[in-house]
Image (cartoon, rainbow, N blue to C red; front, side):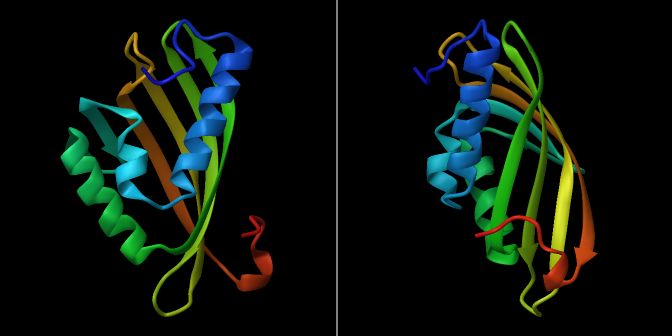
Length: 136
């Protein structure tokens, strides 16, 4: 089990969003993957994944490229076993160029509170260090 469990209330949906933000900010693919079902389905931009092993491989590669990663998530909507979030994160590449990524995610959970579906739409914008908003 991965509390809070569906059906979500506003309070438990906010808790779930905060727990996800905290996990992603560890930048530990194994830790993050534990929040998803073994056969979880993902769409991340134009990449489609299935299962924890693919999630771990994807996140390992992501955080190898996206240095200094820091994320903020905000509850957008919820109902039953679904949550929608808005998010923004900042990172820099190996050359020192900073980016802000922002977008939306739609989540669906199983009865044990594990995410079985995650669909993310994300846009990246180059920014200067002075434009950063998310403190480390």
